[in-house]
Image (tube, rainbow, N blue to C red; front, side, top):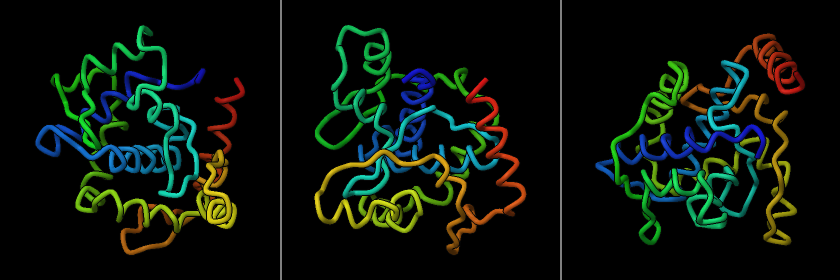
Length: 190
């Protein structure tokens, strides 16, 4: 969790909830975060939240964020208190309880979040889960997941693989992706 940014994760969910009249399905929020992180990584050589993603039966999941939302962390931690200051969980819905603090975001964070919302907010959580099953980072574990139902840590290298669909957001020039990948690993190891 060293590079995980709990403030950006909480505010990103809050941003999604605000966009959806103040509440968003938990699974849908997780899929949107994965898409934001994937697209931002490919364009700007870093993810927005710094999360670790897992391939699970219902698709890609940002695991640190999932743990905070579901209360699987120390409830007294500063990070959990930050989440609770802005978000509340009611069943499968995450409710915004305070206005979005956009100061935590860079310009590119919001650019990508808006692009993902524009292209994917119309899909429900099950459509997004199914959609994530076509991406290389999930496909790598498909057989294992179908056999065991377990979860598997995704390889960040797979986020740089193209996935071609009608939206065209994840079909980039190979040379551009190699540059982004090199930059990402240079800064990650710095």
